[in-house]
Image (cartoon, helix red, strand yellow):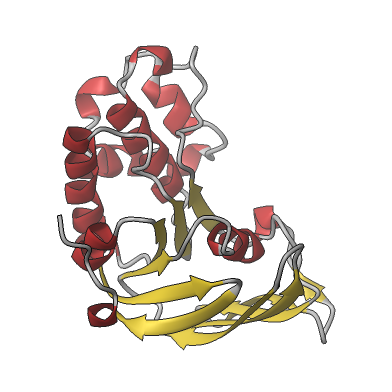
Length: 220
């Protein structure tokens, strides 16, 4: 299970969440710009600390302000993929994937490279990759840490339609094959419907869990 119980004052409103859901598949996070979607991810990742709250992921307590528990980000075992892929441009793809890994973990690279179809790119420099390729490398690097949860903050926003479709197919593959729960921030209702059966609707800082059928898809 994942438990998110958070209360925190922001500049224009108070952020609040009282959510519990199974730690499997993808949960989309949907809402207008500035409503608190990324703030929620940052609370989970430990990049921001809420004034009051409890965050539990798969029976691991990451934050409990009443008990004065607040694990630093590097001890939370969380993968985080941003809108823009953050790679080392002068490293090879292999170098980017290996960065920070222990020697005994290197055997996992082949499986992740196969999963994301990046085996042929392992010797390429990060600076020479397309936007879609960079994002696949960033996702692969996050998965190699075997995180207990993967946070994705609009990972397709900077890509064209062809690259978006490409990455969506890989995300579906990840959901089906890894068992790692994903929290996926998006402005695109079609993406949310494609990846999720539930979504967290954030309106002016108030986060509510709903079935995906309650998220309307705008007419073209």
